[in-house]
Length: 346
Image (cartoon, rainbow, N blue to C red):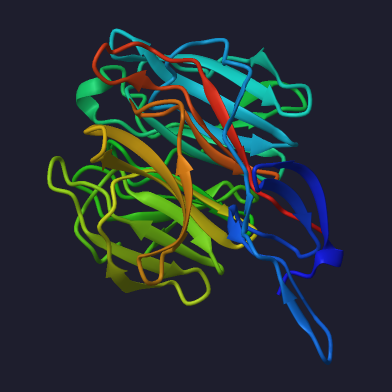
């Protein structure tokens, strides 16, 4: 129940109200205000709308940056490498400071001869691994792992990934360790300990091999959602328990995921769909329950247009970020970046 004493109205126009509510978090949507005493209950005659919208932030200094790695270290978002032209990756890296809404170029990734990368961040360091097939790597640089230290703006090579060459793997971090796995024609899964600089093989993923899957960590579990094996889309979700080191089947899905996020132990997805009113494709943001493949709340259309291989899809400080990549149709390389602030009240 939302009591009127708990709502501080910020704006009002034709019953469209942006409000601060005295609860921990309220998602955008339609609400009524009610107040109840022992003898009387009063409910507002009309609903009001809590609005949260996508905001375009400063554009990146490099257009495109598709197939890039993005991670957060020390309250800044880093975007490393990315295809900008000629279907080859560049080794530039940029840092975005949300407080100043500014981009700064950082030390370049140490290698140039590669086709895809993956990575993660642990504490105050970022980690990027070259993961493409041999056919893209004539100099044999596949599986090299590098650690980036923002304090010194320097890269240091670490122990190479022992799982062999692959294309389209994913990287996540949990409880002080990094995890890398899957990819085209791959089902293996590995853990990296930055303290010992050692790799450990985890139980193989029991589902069908895939790349391009959605990955989230929720309730101390890793979720693998959908994905594709070259062309067929996989319609299943699996989770990995970090304590028991066991995989489990969760549910079947009917999604075309473009980005996945977790904020305050709640999951959000950006899903590609067809708008049947306009017969065009759009991205829709949803609050999502991965355990049951259930949409909890429709949070509206992403205004930046559809694109391939967005270079930024990350959450930080109760905000979602999405952008860069290459537009469909005219193949324009994009440098726009968008932020979606969740209403997260204290």
